[in-house]
Image 1 (cartoon, rainbow, N blue to C red):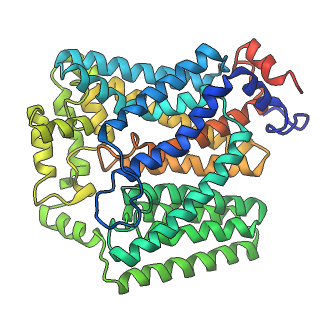
Image 2 (cartoon, rainbow, N blue to C red):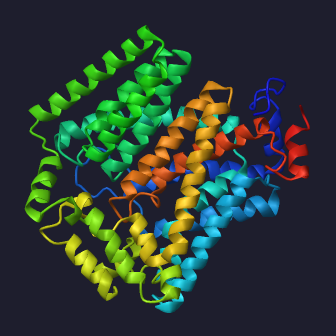
Length: 471
């Protein structure tokens, strides 16, 4: 690694100014505002329970089509009216997106699902990549990071207040505490990502304000009762935060004691409220069926393989977008227009024996294999690995604590989403309420890293001059 002591802070002049000079300000500003507000409003509009304190917005279902228009408009507008920086990370994501699109289109020609089903089925798989590539093309930097941090702090506080109101009105039960979102898993994911940043930032700066806020988000996130998310955060992410402070006895003791007291108190409150999770039920089901391999999360892979194992073309490019088990396929099942294999999958998922996410007959990754083939699955795994690895490197090498903490939180945020995607076919990577803040954090962290990455192969000579011209 080349020393970076001579470089100014990224937010001061270097990469940030170069990136800002390259982008179209109006498009970037409007797109940034869209990513902050629209996903929350669209999710809120899907709340259907009467009297829910979290339901504030109503909009028609067709409004969802605003998303692809804005994402594509921001992406193409950035190149038409601006001059985005070109570097290997962005180019690799564009190539993965192209590979998934080609696989979806070629696979769909083998069993054409209809033009709308094909296009929207492809969009549902690449929407997370579209959002991330569009954010990178806009070149958001530390200026937007300050706004994003303030927004997420307010959003977390509002969700906590609304969550308490939902407990008072609806009672403590699984999926009752979902804040402003229509789905409790969405709220928990967002709150755990923000909490992860605050706790890790505390390990770097000893900021008690961040420690208090990060711990304060945990009870509401926990009371959403997504056991996978709770275990992921409390058993994996939180111990890694404490491990970061292993040489600071007082700091680690303060964080550990406060965290344990908070989590234990929350768990006991949930127990007194008579809330039972699904873990015991899943254990009983495993015993009845004869082992864990009988659960849908494992059975989904042989089913997807059987779907594409008809010949070289289907093996490489799949059976076509929306022809297997994704969200568009679910809609086709509800309308009675699904393929035979899709009908069989969702007949299981809508039966009385279905146990929820643990028993889903397909998941996001097996669905990508079934609809986009080996090419689509490899491209999906490559882009996800590239994002996680890049954030990991930035977290190790960047000199500024807020960027380090956000890189760490975003890295585990993507892994948290991927973990959920192993259990369910939709509601994860295409969920803009989660992906929009993750894409913004990731894009800003990567742009702020560019001045410190001295690799001559990272960008073109023109873009390198643009980044370093003011130093």
